[in-house]
Length: 298
Ligand SMILES: NC(=O)c1ccc[n+]([C@@H]2O[C@H](COP(=O)([O-])OP(=O)(O)OC[C@H]3O[C@@H](n4cnc5c(N)ncnc54)[C@H](OP(=O)(O)O)[C@@H]3O)[C@@H](O)[C@H]2O)c1
Image 1 (cartoon, rainbow, N blue to C red):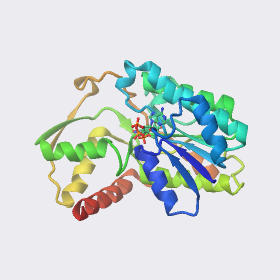
Image 2 (cartoon, helix red, strand yellow):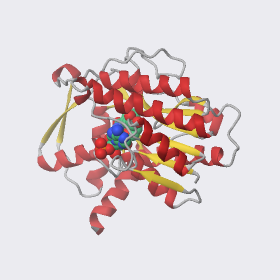
Image 3 (cartoon, helix red, strand yellow):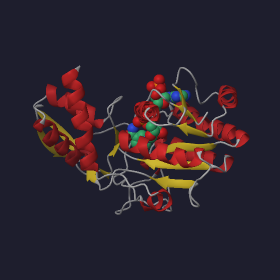
Image 4 (cartoon, helix red, strand yellow):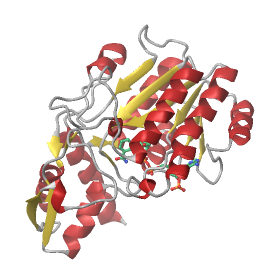
C-alpha cells in the first residue's frame, strides 16, 4: 500500500482521500471510529497490517477552546497519537507526514514565522500540537511535519462555512480585525501533501525533503478582511451579504487565547519540493465557486 491516512473523516482528511482517488496513489483511509491514534497497540497493528510507504496523520483534536478544560484528551490525540504513529513508521520504514499548526507560536512577532523561529504556544491546543511535533522528531527519522494555518474547505466546519451560515441568519456580523494569519484551502494543502507523498512512495524524496516545513495560503490577512472577501465573492454568486463590523480580540472573549500574528513564511517547502500555495484570495474564490455549484445542484 502506498499511503495510510488517519483522521480520514476530518475536513483535511476527506479532501486528501478524495484527491487520492483521482490519482494513481493507493490509499487506505481510516476515520476516527476505525483507528484511534491515541491507542498505541491499535496503531502498531494497523500500520503493520497495511504496510504503507507513507503515513499521513490528519487526525487531531482541533477544538481550540474546549482543549483548555480537556487537556488530557488534547494531549492524548495531538501528542500520544503522533508519537504512536512515529513509532510505527520507524519500525516499518515508512515516512510519516504529520500535520501541525501555526498555534505553536505566541504571535508576538510582527513578520511571518519561519521554521527556525522559537515556539511558545499560548493555549493548550498549541501546547499539545507542539508536543506532537517533538514526539515525531525524536521518534521517527523519516518525518515531514507540515505546519499550516486558518484551514478551510468544502468538508466539515470552518470559518468560511460559518460566515456563509451566519450571513444568511443575521444582518450584522462583528469580526475580529487584530489577528493576522494565512487562510489555507484544504484543496491546496491536500494536493501539496499528495505531491510530497508521491516523491516518498517513488523512493525519490528531495535532498532536503525531511524535517519541518510551513505550508499556508500565500499572503496574509485578518479575520475581518477574510470575512469581507468571503462576502464580496459569495455576493457575486447571489448570496446575501451582511454588514460587517471590525472588533478587537478583547471584544470577543474566548476560552483559549489566540496568537495575534500567526502568518507563516513558506519559502523552505518551495525550495525543497517546489510547492507554493496560491494567493489566499484565488483559493477562496475557487472554493466558493465549487461550493455554490454544489449548492445549486443538490
Ligand atoms: N482547522 C484549522 O484551522 C487548522 C489550522 C492549523 C492546523 N490544523 C491542523 O490540520 C490538521 C487537520 O485539521 P482539520 O481542520 O481537518 O481537523 P478536523 O476537521 O477537526 O479533523 C480532525 C479529524 O481527526 C479525528 N480525530 C479526533 N481524535 C482522533 C483520534 N483519537 N484518533 C483518530 N482520529 C481522531 C476527528 O474525528 P472526530 O470528529 O470523530 O473526533 C476528525 O475527523 C490537524 O492536524 C490540525 O491540527 C488545522
